[in-house]
Length: 374
Figure 1: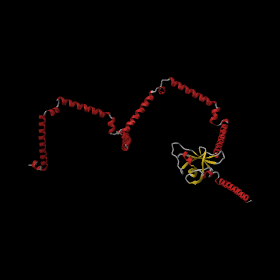
Figure 2: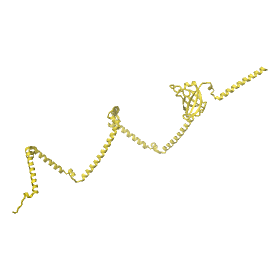
Figure 3: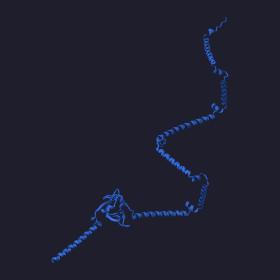
């Protein structure tokens, strides 16, 4: 009887242990919500930032190459980035992530849960270390596509309405385009213009004028190319030299001096304009006057008198050159000149004595003039 009781108690103990273990496993499964493996695998933390997490939740899976390697641990607001998401991933997956890797928030299906997909990055980049930040990029959601599609449909509807109104105006004959479509005179004018242009082109082809030479002769292009090349060489020489031309280009003092010279020239020009105005006024007065200067300009008798005087003077000079007359004797006979000079001196002395005698007579008339009746 005692053995039966012991066996019964042992059986109850086994059943209780199994039930307790099952309840513990159930509670652990519910508590960790699918993250039970975190208790048994080595994890490292990585961070990423997003402007908008688009409904991402804690515990959302983290994938690399379509394989789940971790989960979202924390989602915190940040004034700089918007939100910072802390992820815990398997240490073994850290070797596949580079420094330039990027994280994206994706959706499982169209309306499924959110998860984070991490791109591996470029092979040339260095490996990432635990705790570092990964750049986050937001993917276009189905809602964004629908909103954009709605805006596009609305825009297309407005465009179709405007197109219908435009077609209605054309059908009613309003506007220039309707005239182009309905009025045959426009076609006729265009046809005439095309025919005229064709004739002009034909004349240019068959002529030998300048326009034909500009079209066919490549020498003009060659000359322009050579001129451009020479200009380029000249510019290079000017840049490499230190002569006057470079100084004219770079030195502002020369420009200032030229500016001062221009101001002086301008002042001189104003003075010349004033002088010209005065000359014009003088000329007007001269035309209107009847004075001596106008007579000297207009009366030919002055020229004739001067001409006759010049002829007479020339005749006198010819006679002097020939040795004729008293003037020639004065010029050539030095003795005659000396005697004439002595005579003039004596005449001057006599004149002075005569003047003295006249003064003495005026002073003492009784000395020279005596009157007596008896």
